[in-house]
Length: 228
Ligand SMILES: [Fe+2]
View 1 (cartoon, rainbow, N blue to C red):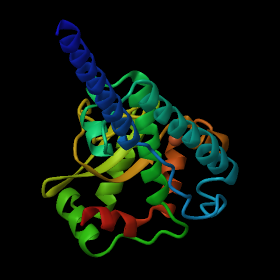
View 2 (view 1 turned 180 degrees about the horizontal axis):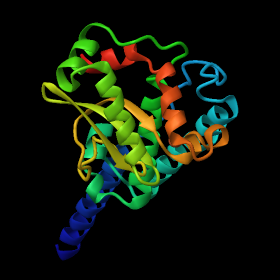
View 3 (view 1 turned 180 degrees about the vertical axis):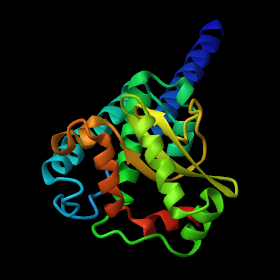
């Protein structure tokens, strides 16, 4: 009788172990993986504002490394958030490796997409929103440039939507406005990488010239999609 009870208990425990393992495997399989967006243009297409060698290294080395490293962190640390939104909303709970590389992966994916050869000035709802929030396109450009210029060291300048208004700000390192630890919050519409790796080969220490020329490759149609 006692042996029978014991055998039953072992069976139940064994069954629970199998179930737990199966659930863990499902969770791992469903966990978020970051992927690199295809570059929407040739790496020389943004010349002369962004030089080809910088683009090749930036996209092919720096960004690729962020993608690999965040996915390594997700696997090694068993991070189980299933969406980018949840991942960044819980940044305060993540390791430095997951935070820095997750931001690097996401921020650059946006950066490539909000650029294109041959920019034209914003129109329609984007122009209206910029004029409504900043007074004019020129004033917006001044404030955005200032945000990029005053970010000490490495980081990003951002245009974000916060409720019914647009805001400009910057974040350090690879932080972004989706992160719970960020002072700047909102839906990113436009991002400018002001890390030296984004401009140093062509512009050396002249970040102001990099930003001035970058306006010629901003993809305002992509900004409009994100404003919707
Ligand atoms: Fe970068």
